[in-house]
Each structure stands twice: as C-alpha cells, then as structure tokens.
Amino acid sequence: MTGLDGLDRDKLSGYSICTSPRSGSNFLCQHLSGTGLLGHPLEYFNWGGRRYFDDPDYPKDIAGQVWKILTMGATPNGIYGLKLFAHQHDWISGEVNWVDALPNLRFVLLTRRDLLGQAISWARALQTGQNRSSQPMAQKPVFDAGLIQSQLNALARERARWEMFFARTGIEPLRFEYGTMIEDPRHAVSQVAELMGLKPPSKLDPGNVTVELQRDASNLEWADRFRAERGDPNILDLI
Image: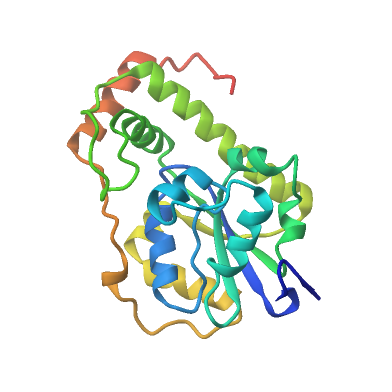
C-alpha cells in the first residue's frame, strides 16, 4: 500500500512514545535515535519546536507533519519513531486519526513517579524558557506555588488521559519509568528494539546524547516549600 508521495506504508513500522513534559523523554529519544536503527523520535506534531530545533521550514499542516514522521522520523531500515504528549493529540485530532495514519504503530508509555518533581521541573522550564539544558536561560526561576499547582494538575491530566486511552483500546504499551530509565538507558533501548523485532544493541554511544539533567538543590527546596504551603491532607484535588 502506497501513499504520501509514494511511500510504501507496508514496509514501515514505528512506535509512539506517549508521555508528558519533563519526563526525561528527550534523553530517551536521543539514545534511541543514536542507534541508527530505531527511528528518530521527536515531537513531530509540534511544528514550532521543530522549526526552533531542526528545520525553519518545518510544515505547519498536519499532513506534512505525518509525512515528516514517516521520512525524517525513520531510519533506513524502515522504522520510525515519534513522541507525543496527551495535550498535543488535541492539536491534531480534528484533522487526522493519527493512529490510523501511522502504519504498523506500537506504543511506549513513559511516566515519572515523582509527579511533584516533574511539575516543578515544568514550572522552572516555563519561567526560564530552557526546555533543554543546551538552551540558554532567558531568566532565573522563582518559586511560584500557583504555577507549580497548575503544572501538577496538567500532569495528572496527561497521565490519566494516556491510561484511559490504553484501558479503553485494550492496547498494552511497553512501559518505562523515568528513574529506572535514567539509571539504565541501555535496557530501555533494548526493550524498544525487541518491541520492533530487532536485536538489542550491545552498547550505547553517550556522545549521541546532548541533553543533561537540569535538576539541582533548589528543586528539592521548592518541593518542601510547596508541600508546606499546599500540603493540606484533608483536600483531594479536582483535576
């Protein structure tokens, strides 16, 4: 079956990393891409991000973005990868059924156990404009309990939406947790390779990874301060 400018869809297979912001997904994606065999997973439905990081002419139209997933996102062996946040589904769902548009698609779910730490990381990134360690910091972050609460709520929704998606469809994704993935990325990459029917790589080249952990002592200080201000155990939050 061909389409999208003559691409043979039957010869393509791929995976979607279903996750949320500040989950360590860039770290995982760079390791996967560095194998040269497991596609190049990126946020292909985030045209603004792709124009900033990769291609100033990256398409705004969703059909063009799907084409990029199957070409730019693929390695020569026909395996492609992408990364998707739950809220990014809303950007495209009115125009494309993305699961149907991507052939032979498999799923990876990446979560982070420390949800407050993830929310703090997201709040800091929003303040500094530094989504990756390689980006310059626009301004220094300042503690803002309201912003942290807002991102905590958003992350709870992101996680719940993915879990509902998998429960409703009966799809069982390959699951990773941030902490164990960071400690042993080779094991995570090996599992994705097995998911795609490939032999796991014997080793990883750390030179393929340009992102670094951005967490510092202030993250823990903010967590303690947030719990002191917002940690009423008699409240069960609405999200």
